[in-house]
Length: 193
Ligand SMILES: NC(=O)c1ccc[n+]([C@@H]2O[C@H](COP(=O)([O-])OP(=O)(O)OC[C@H]3O[C@@H](n4cnc5c(N)ncnc54)[C@H](OP(=O)(O)O)[C@@H]3O)[C@@H](O)[C@H]2O)c1
Image (cartoon, rainbow, N blue to C red; front, top):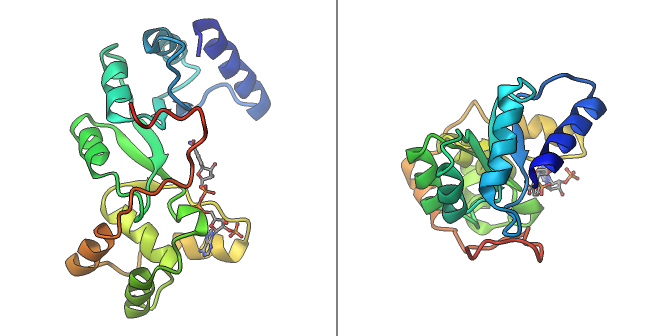
């Protein structure tokens, strides 16, 4: 997160990916030890030098975003855990107001929410799977999702969400499943900020 470290980490990544620029480069976690101004200055330098096309962040709360936005450097995306059991409505609204896209990681709650009764019922109604219902719920909110699967069949299933649509009642029910449960919460996370 220090100025020089950010520049070097990006150079290393470009080398490993055998490319000369990245479309989107993210700050993976906020870090209270290094001032965000210093990190954003390095991200801006990468942007100005053409090594990255867009700056994003990850695991940032509204307060982290407010601090980062004070630097006036454009942030295009915030990649956060987001699924029906962690419906971060206030963060979504703040991001919308500030032109920041939400990218939902663990959009299936790491597989832990797929047997939920409400999701099962809604999935049956549409002849889809509960994973597809979770992904469609995100899509209809304008949220990008990055589900992970090691199976080709499930990868196909996860992209096959464009032939149905959740109605208002479905969406309201899924919104109501929120339990503020995080499946990704390492010791260094700063979600209380
Ligand atoms: N920015 C960050 O700090 C951060 C943190 C965590 C994760 N991420 C990223 O987010 C991405 C996804 O998150 P995640 O892996 O934590 O959780 P996830 O995508 O919500 O869930 C993955 C789990 O769900 C299973 N699964 C996938 N599709 C399924 C389907 N259609 N039906 C049933 N089970 C299905 C997978 O098993 P199979 O593989 O067996 O299909 C795997 O166990 C990853 O690429 C990861 O790099 C980012």
